[in-house]
Amino acid sequence: MLESPVQYDFDFAIAGGGPAGCSAAISLAQRGHSVVLFERETFPRFHIGESLLSTANDAFDALGVTERMEAACFPDKWGARLFTHDGRSGRGVDFADVREVTRPKTYQVCREEFDRILMERARELGVDIREGYRVNGCSFAAEEAVLDFAAVGDGATGRVRVRALVDATGRNGLIARKFNLRTDEPLLANIAVFSHFRNVPRLPDDRPDDIRLVAREDAGWFWIIPISKELTSVGVVLPKNRYAQMAGGSSEELLQRAIGDTPVVAELMRDAQREWPVRVEKDFSYSASTYAGDRWILAGDAGSFLDPVFSTGVSIAMESGIEAAVELDRALKQNNFSARSFAAFSRRQRKRFKTFRRFVVGFYTPQFRDLFFDPNPPMLLFRAVITVLAGKWDSSLRTRFFNHIFFGLVALQKRFKMFGPAFRRDRDAGYP
Ligand SMILES: Cc1cc2nc3c(=O)[nH]c(=O)nc-3n(C[C@H](O)[C@H](O)[C@H](O)COP(=O)(O)OP(=O)(O)OC[C@H]3O[C@@H](n4cnc5c(N)ncnc54)[C@H](O)[C@@H]3O)c2cc1C
Image (cartoon, rainbow, N blue to C red):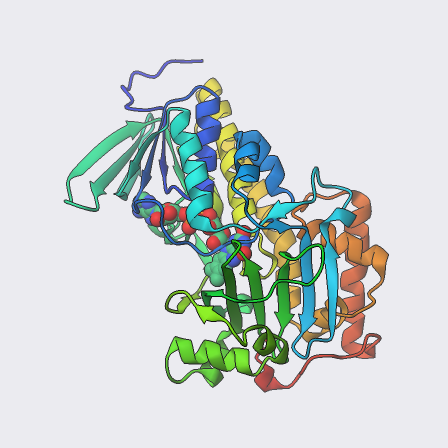
C-alpha cells in the first residue's frame, strides 16, 4: 500500500445509519479500517420498509448478526400470499421452492429494532457512531474527502478528513443531489399511504406471518405485513393519477376509502385499531447515472430505489453497503479511489436495479397481473419469477431463460388473453 501525505481523521466516513450505512460500516470495520458514521436522527427512529427477502440471510451472515436476528423474534417470512381485491386466489409464493438461495426463511421487521441491531453491531466493532449529526456538505480533492457536519441539537459544527465517503443517506441523496445524478422513474410515479394497526388477523395456517399482497381492481395494491406479535403494517400504493382521483379529505380518510373498496382488505381490517397517524410517501422510484466517483460511493437508496411492491429495498441496501466496503478495501490497498476504479461496482448496482425494475414496472400492467395473480400459473415459470423475487437477481442461466419466457407470455397476453383477464383496463384504472 502506498502512503498518502494527508493526515486523515478516519479511513472512511459514512453519511447515514440505515441498513446501507451500517452494513458498509460493519464490513469496513471487519476489514480493520477506522470508520466514522454520521446519522442525523437519534435511534430508535421510525422507518418504513419492513419485509425482507431470502437473500438478506447472506448479508446477516456476512455482518455477523444472524443469531441476533433469530433472537429478536421478528415474524418469520416464508414468502407471500397473493390476493385479488375480491379475495380470489390467495395463492402462496413459497421461498422454500427457490433452489438458488442459501436459506429461504427470512423476516418482517419493526425497523426501529432492526436498524438498532445493525447500528449496535457497528458500534461493537469500533465504528465511531455520531447520532444526531447531519452531514451538511462534502468535497473531494486528489488525496482526501472532506465532510462538514452539524449537531442537530445545538448546531455545533465540525469537519472530518477521510480517504473516501460512503453516501448512505437514503432518499435524501446527499451526493446524488450535489452532482445531479438522479433520474425519476415516470412509469413508477406512485404514492404510498400507510400506518401500523392492531387486531389484524394473521393467516390461518402454519405460515401465519407471510406478507399479503392484495391487488386492487385498479392499478393500486395493498401490503399487509406482520411486524411483531401485535402490530401489522398496512399500506396502499396508488399511481399518482389514481391517487388524484381518490384524494379529498385527510390521508386517514383516503386510506379508509381504499380499504373500504377493496373487499378482502375491508374484511381483514374490520376490527383493526390504528397505532399512529397515517403517513404518506411519494416520489420514491429513481436511479442514478453513476454509483461512484472520485473518493465517493453510493449505497442503498442513496443510489437508487424502486417501488416497494417486491420488498427489495432493505435487502439491496445491505448488499450494496457490503459491496461498497469491499470496493473501498480494494481501493485502499491499491491507493486508487478514482471513479474509473469503481466502474465495475457501478455496473453491478445498475444491473441489479434493471433486473428488479423489469418485474416492478411489469407489475403495473394488467397483463402481468393476469399471470402473476392467476390461481394456477405455469409452475416452472413461476419458480423462476419467485427466484428473483426472493432476492436472487443474479440468478442462473436457466432461471433467466424461464423469466424471458414469462415476460414473453405477458406480452402475448396483451393480444390473446390466454389467462382470464382479472383486472380493469380502462384509463381510469390508473396504469401508467
Ligand atoms: C412506502 C415504502 C414501503 C417500503 N417497504 C419496503 C419493504 O417492505 N421492504 C423493503 O426491503 N424495503 C421497503 N422500502 C424501502 C426501504 O424503506 C429502503 O429501501 C431502505 O430503508 C433503504 O435503506 P438505506 O440504508 O439505503 O436508507 P435509509 O434506511 O433511508 O437510511 C438513510 C439514513 O440516512 C440518514 N440521513 C439522511 N440524510 C442524512 C444526512 N445529511 N446526514 C446524516 N444522516 C442522514 C437518515 O436519517 C436515515 O436514517 C419501502 C419504501 C417505501 C417508500
